[in-house]
Image 1 (cartoon, rainbow, N blue to C red):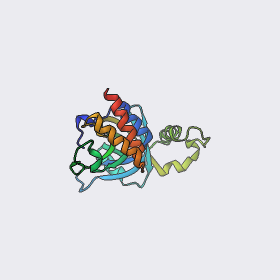
Image 2 (tube, rainbow, N blue to C red):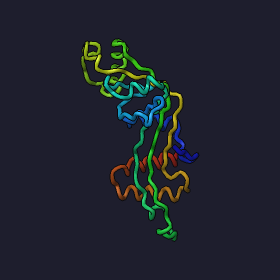
Image 3 (cartoon, rainbow, N blue to C red):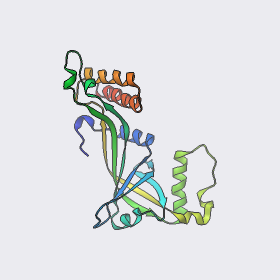
Image 4 (cartoon, rainbow, N blue to C red):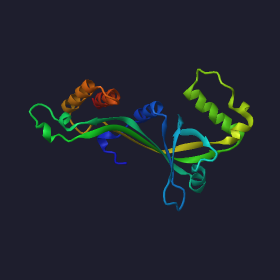
Length: 205
């Protein structure tokens, strides 16, 4: 994706974003295919590794075995910004350029398939500790043969592409005007987009 300097996210930003949006599209290109395999999935970020599991019949396994380089793509926190919101004072509201504010993170990494039951159980413990740490559940290894219905995947993070497009290409006065209008509209996504906008302004200071 295109990432302009004003929109490039920091490690703190992309890690916080993925913690809040732990569901994305896993893309495996395989070899000599007309199209890559794209699978929606939940995941956990542990330090420099992505951890997830999928059903054994999932079509992604063949693609990963052909080529272990994959992309995990996550996007969200978006809000449409009308053209009239992009102008202030005596500026012509017809001259404003509409846009969409959004965050997007793409993780490029090397995937390793996990099949050993003990290792699959360990992977599941990591996921459970992240998504429901307060809930007492049966240990994954105690599910016995049912573990054979899934395979685990560990993705070593090689590169992170993060974009936080929240008006960083314009001056503070114009960004604050958009922030006020987001607060007034208060539609789906507006509050979190406004928070990103203001947080990034604070970080610029």
